[in-house]
Length: 78
Image 1 (cartoon, helix red, strand yellow):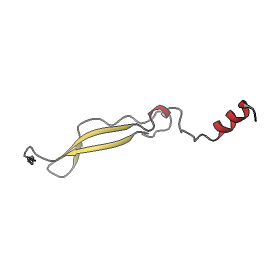
Image 2 (image 1 turned 30 degrees about the vertical axis):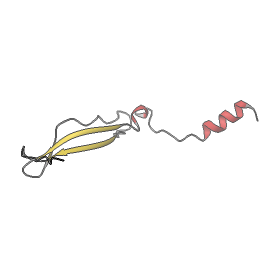
Image 3 (image 1 turned 135 degrees about the horizontal axis):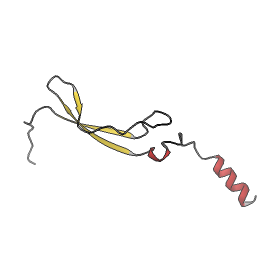
Image 4 (image 1 turned 90 degrees about the vertical axis):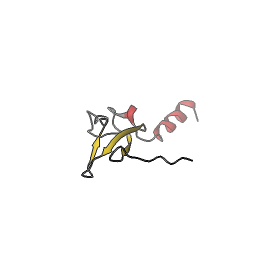
């Protein structure tokens, strides 16, 4: 088996990485902070990453950190 044949076989086994427009954003982790309001709704404190212009999806893995309502959060000494 020649090197060229082996390389073609290996390239053929690679998984499809999806859309060409957001390929470089796939696999990234983004944290977004939000705050819970008095009426139990959640308001974003930071904007979410934009959708892909080509496929319309948001490829990042988003972790949303929701702060509790009010300022009176207690800290436990320990």
